[in-house]
Length: 334
Image (cartoon, rainbow, N blue to C red):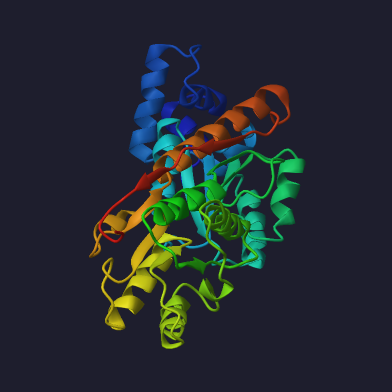
């Protein structure tokens, strides 16, 4: 591997002069600068990024941690993070945790040794005290999607409000038996959406029927069998609100395979507005959360925290930003 010393010998200057040229310091005369850069090109010299990071105290690299990039909400969030980070001169490392707290911990250990400057956690897992510890130690962290409290910088939506708006729309459209496809109960995001569903039923004068609340058992795919079992028991709803768009897609397949028409027999609604929600048949009514904007703002907040810490030696007080959602009515509801 070509070293700084090799470049210096080739250019006939000291190693410190080469360092000043590569750091774009103005104290080196033009002819010397040209000789150094010619030597760099001739030898194909590449600076040691790790050594550079140690010297500067930063790497201009951040990490984005997601449960799975296959989850349809995360590609848009990731793109927002990457576009914003790139414009600010940062590289993004993507980490998939597969909803595993221990994998989260392993990633954090590895990332810290790679000198990342900050971390965005999309969908923090229950029991992720190690994430809070990072913040408490003064390490820049921003949460998105699943927000547990206001003690860490975060960007998200009002999940209870999103489910309330969707349920209220179904109630006002004349639906009386509205089922709810419930995500994992240990994840606050889904509990918040359940609360919004229950509140909208109550305000609409409808009683909660627990038999119409479908609880996830083994991943999103389980909703196919859960929905079919509900129908076999004679508990057909006239509408289903799913706690996410992917869950709504599975519910729609179950209804279709049971010979039911959407929305003629059963209206279906989701929450998220992932890209494919407008492309399926019929197109899914949903509540849109601004996924790209969430990612972009998360990156902006993280970079601000990194710069604030460089200047002051500590993080700025945490702030939670809640972005607006929009009701999107398509052909899956009547």
